[in-house]
Length: 82
Image 1 (spheres, rainbow, N blue to C red):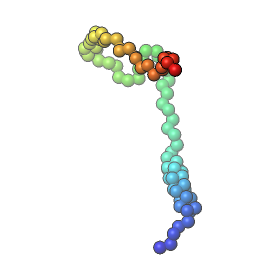
Image 2: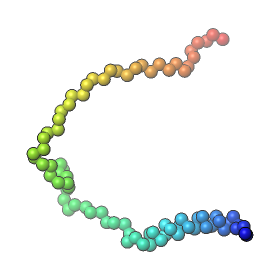
Image 3: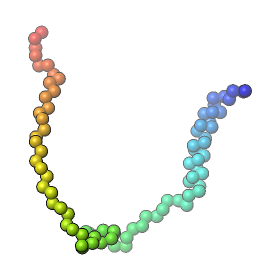
Image 4: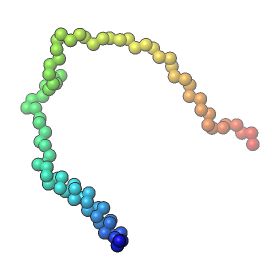
């Protein structure tokens, strides 16, 4: 079995992914054009209207959480006992 030079393997390793990208670009029709609405109104959404028979969102009062524990990491030594 004959060994393959490293340069050939390097070229193949770079050429195969580049060729795959070029083929995928060639097969696609190009980027899709965005669908922009003719008019835009503040407060309106393009989705379906919410149903009026839906119950209102429940208002749950969040419980109070205790304050976080104090951060006590004394890494600096201010003791001058030298």
